[in-house]
Amino acid sequence: MLFRLARPALFALSPERAHDLTIAALKRAPGRSPPRQGPLSTTVAGLAFPNPVGLAAGFDKNAQVPDALLGLGFGFAEVGSITPRPQAGNPKPRLFRLVEDRAVINRMGFNNGGAEAALPNLARRQGRPGIVGINIGANKDSADRIADYAEMARAMAPHASYIAVNVSSPNTPGLRALQDEAALRDLLGGVIAARDEATQSHPPPPVFLKVAPDLTAADIDSIARLALESKLGALMVSNTTISRPGLQSSQSAETGGLSGAPLLTLALERLRDFRKATGGALPLIGIGGIGSAEHAWERIRAGASLVQLYSALVFEGPGLVRRIVSGLETLMRRDGFGSIAEAVGTE
Image (cartoon, rainbow, N blue to C red; front, side):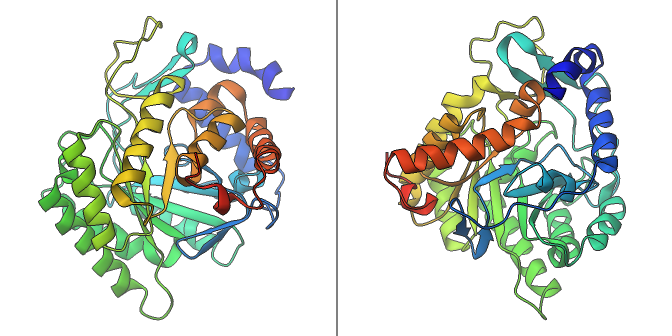
């Protein structure tokens, strides 16, 4: 109700200004506990998730409000992307609401305060309950991007429930080339070694890899093979797309990554491709276009152990989280499953 009343005022602002105000409001919001274990609890990569619905990276770039986000009902929250050094990102405007398409185009360019801004925030929440993943990236002007990822894994591992390696943003020139087999092998090896070095005194957080939806069949096979060889915790399928599938908005020609409702079909197809390529031997996280419990359930039945959303919140508000969680329980029981894990890949 409150979001419906506030939406016209928020939509009168630029998307980036509205986002900044939302972060500020969450900082001041009364503290709520994260969800407890219950009927939708599931274990992935050794982590016990109270429900399978997470917030995707991009909202809380500097890890300012992860506990407030968990308090909205998310089973887990992912902060970042965070780069080693502060980065202003691309020139504004760089974020666009496509209202007619229920979509967002962004070309933010990994804007964040760097490790120096995020680490104090993460250190302050040490010991608090709730699963918080850390999405890491490389600086645009880095001479050695693979070294950037290793540096970030080393710095963030002590604070992360899991580390998400983002090599699939279309807004840093050349970044997606790190999905090529040789580069990806070197990158994952460096990240895992750095993580292990930083967590010798306690169990290391699992490493997840976030991939693009705009991949060829050969790309999918090589990434799946490397992910299995590297013993990753999960593959995250998928990031934003550079394609423009049948958009109606006047801003549809803006460059950047497209997310939201138009990504639904492509992201689902890509999830099925990775399910087949991995033979179900590696957990998958379904991302892209999810805006309802039915969407989330379809992604789980197609092979996702967890799901993430972000763009749908722009149009539906924070109450969407609890509606999806509640709806998932109803759908799980309707279809005769006793747990989320039982339903994964059963379409």
